[in-house]
Length: 236
Ligand SMILES: Nc1ncnc2c1ncn2[C@@H]1O[C@H](COP(=O)(O)OP(=O)(O)OP(=O)(O)O)[C@@H](O)[C@H]1O
Ligand SMILES: [Mg+2]
Image (tube, protein in one colour):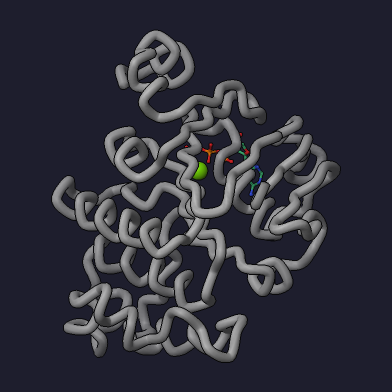
């Protein structure tokens, strides 16, 4: 298994948010991580990326233990993070963001270069001189995704990329993520937008109270609206 998370616990100070998360993901696969607000999805994402320190448990990526390592070490092992809220700098240009990220590529001959990013995201090429603060939400999300790609990741983790975006812009994100999959990148997608999650991912995992409580293939999950309603409170 490419990614194997086993009995991971983590939290903030004295409070434990993740109470034993286990999940796995095969190479080239895409898993949607669903769950109501506050169940610990972002905490899991940040723990996988090394930004929250695990209290116990294991995160194996391609046979290497990542739990307890620093964010830069985890990035070098091939984990690219697109954080919730995008974290684009308002006073740096698009080109600045991309060039800074390209310097952190983990291989001398990376699959993703700034030029290739501009081909994949023509909108960013047009706006390369614009400052982060002048971009639309969708353009900022493209920068956040492009920045992760430039580190040449084997696994991309996205935390609610559709958040706050208009449906037409979510369709563009959908297109970008499906192309990434076609490139062979493994995807872990935290989403509230079920349409996007189902479009991109062949499996879903649902978190509740700091654990993964349900796992299904996307078509099976779509045929089971009662489970979606019980765990997510929405009609899938
Ligand atoms: N930096 C922090 N310090 C302390 N508690 C935090 C911190 N970040 C999150 N929490 C708490 O951890 C719990 C899980 O939050 P988390 O952000 O992981 O949930 P989430 O599933 O990503 O929610 P959402 O869908 O709203 O993004 C919540 O109770 C939240 O208040
Ligand atoms: Mg979150």
